Length: 400
Length: 122
Image 1: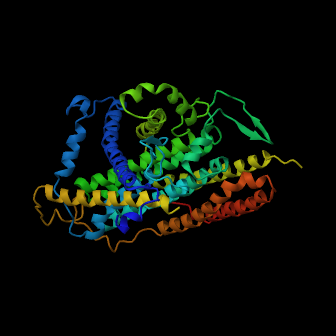
Image 2: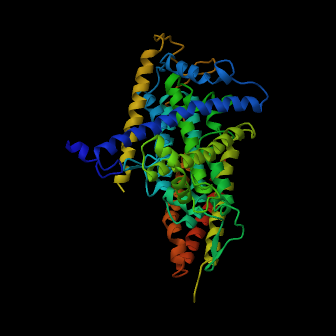
Image 3: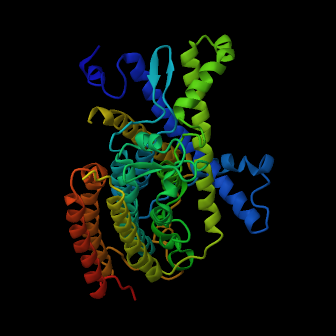
């Protein structure tokens, strides 16, 4: 084995050459799954918008217009590769990749499901299990600003530049409120690790008040939203601003800025901005699910993922007969699928809300947008933080 | 910690290869370039475009960026504190008093820039 390959052994890529190869394939699969969910979301968005506005939407190509996705892809590929003369060529070509990369890298830290074991090798259902996941996601998500600025500046078009400036100043403004809003929930989970956050939300609703465990409503799941409802509202709102979606899509305000920072882009380069935007939307939905709605854990499952694993331990003999797997391995695969479906449903709901809100709320004016970020959301998230700090102070157990 | 980031390096490689290959291949697959003077100009609504590299833009954007850096660093200081808060509170209430002082200063800073009209967009 060459020295280069040896470097990877013992890292999170796996312990042997086989595991490294399988993990590389897994990473590529997750990447292409995210990339191919984008056209599906575009279809849902176009059909959903059409039904909300009492029209049909794309319904000509294939059943329910589903082949419209393929038609769009073909069009993206066979467009004329247009580059404006005045553009800064290097940045102009780099900008779409600079937008796509942070979106894909943030999704890498999301735990999609429980790990599963096949033939004695355990694989995690996430690209990278990072112990400071939430900080990593915020850090990488901020890098998206560079792609947008590069696109706007290199296009040498005033609409692009104005769109990029608006987008970047809106993204950084809402990032402060977004970062502040989740500190309250971090105090409760006591971890930056996204998997541990999911485990902290299993079981029925309960909290500790001066040393006593209080369980007022045992039918409620122990989700973050019941502890920090205000933080959820602030985080979700900031998510719309971070992804430049309506009602905060000022960077692309058609009436004023044509198409904002991607005015001069076409074909596949434009498509990559789109993938970046939808990738951010998916990460944001996944993060909301993990922080406030129990992540992949099933609600009302008592011990959470452990209980699901135990259930499949006693119900997986049929799978062992079909595929030669040990009972524990078959159970881990079935538990993984159960949690993956649960996570997809929760995440899909928030993705739908993103589309829903687009046709519910009108677009803000730019000064209203900045006022909302700095003068409403920032004070409210500070207030939320202060109230949580005080509440936890009074809830502490002091034996003296 | 660094071992945990190894899959990220692999993902960066996959995304970069995807982006480079996709942009290169689609630049070959499209119809032949057919440039004309008007087509190569920056997009403008029917009038000759003005150059943008020298265009000035409002200083408010710089101010927003400076305020962002100030507040974001303050937020980052709060993160590690939030993780250990409930555990250290069991030992002494000092961590509470300490952070109340920090948050009062932070709130005062916000109040100060607010009153100084740094947050106003006309």
